[in-house]
Structure formats: C-alpha cells, structure tokens
Image (cartoon, rainbow, N blue to C red; front, side, top):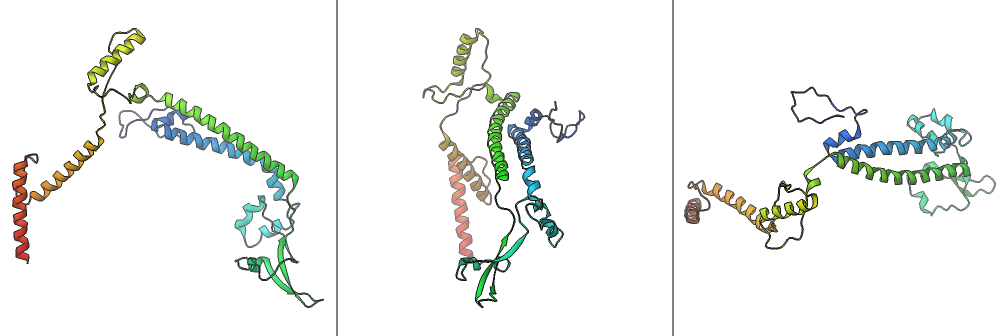
Length: 284
C-alpha cells in the first residue's frame, strides 16, 4: 500500500508511483475520479484485447492469398504504409469490366476517384464507347467470417455490460476506502423557518443519537446553518467591489480610512467631481 505525501516532503524517503505495480486503491489518494479512470483504462484494454483475439482467424484469412491473390505483391509496391491493412478486408486485386447499367450522366463521375475506378473504352466489334468500372475480385461475404464477427459483437455487448457492473463495485470500494466529512454528514433540506440556532440543532441531534446508541456524551462535531440568502451575498460582494473601485478613484484627491462613513464618502465624491470638472474646463 502506498501513501500520498504532501508536496515538498523531506522528512521521509519518497518515490514515484509505479505505473505497473501501483494497486488501484492507492490511486484513490488522488481522488475517486483518478482511480475510476485507470480502472476503466485497464478494463477496456482487457475487453478489446480479447475481442482482437477472437478476430485472429478472420485477420489471417484476409491476409491470405485465398482472399486476395495480389495482396503480397501490392505490399512490396509504392505504399509501405498500407502494409498494416493486409489483415483487414481491403482488397488489392482489381480488374476492369464493362458496366452495363452505368451512364455518363450519373453522379459517380463527380468524385476524386473517378480516374481510378471509372473509365471508357471503344468496343472493337461494335465501335461504340462503353463505360468500364474497376471492381475488386476478392471473395465476398463468407459465412465463417460473418459468424466470427457476430461472436465478437456479442462478446463486446456482454463484456461492456460486465464492465459497467464492475465499475459500480469499484466506485463503491474506492469510496469506502477514502473517508471524508461528507460520509458522516446529514443535510436537513426542510428545516422550520425559525430554527436558526446551531446550538439548538446540536442539542436535538445529540439527544436523537443518544436515544439510538444509548450514549449520553456529545456526538455532533459541527453544526452549521446555511441561510437562503444567496441574493444578499451576491449584492454584498458587488458592493465590496464597487467600494474598492470608488476608493481607488477617490485616492487621487483624499484618503478615506472608513468607506462605511457615508458623510465622508459624500464629501470626497463631491470634491472629486469638482476637480474633474475643473480639469475638463481647462482642457476645453
């Protein structure tokens, strides 16, 4: 088990967290979110690695000449970056054939691949221009490969379902392993309007806990009351900002020790405005 130390620790010998051997519950020292992230990462690696293993037979088939006879010749050509695609359904073997249903007015002529996949030629017998299409000659959909794809899909559905259940258990385990004040806190969302004394609430909870546990000593550590006065607090914050700005402006003419002194502030504002008018008159 590893324990996270405070920044700048010099009393004890420390070392970095090992990315391979650090247990999952130690990562919760950075917060439950960090532990959940690495748990998700590890779980997804396992799920998709197993899904890849299920597709090994399909990948070997698509990389063979049974599927594409010209695949290996093309791989030694001008596109070495295409080599990893040899295990996919990309087909390198193509041939030009007459397209009976193709017409020059169709939209397939308006694309960047038109020179690679479409063309025209003159029939030496009839002398008419025919439209050609460059089609693949690889084997089409096969039952065996389709079955492996379906098995992989079912595995992913089951695996992700189990992953969700596992993640819920990990979240509970990480949360139980990291104690915080919220684990022992109670929120009363509908108190009486006149119940604004924290000591009264403390006595109430102490008495209630005493009846449940049979212990008479004080068990409530802290009790606070949050008033529904967010608008008042917002206005007080804005007032403090305005007073700070006003004090900065008035400091050009006089020094105010108490911004809550209304008479002194009014006099300073009047003096400031007179000086500004005099300055404006001189400029004009």
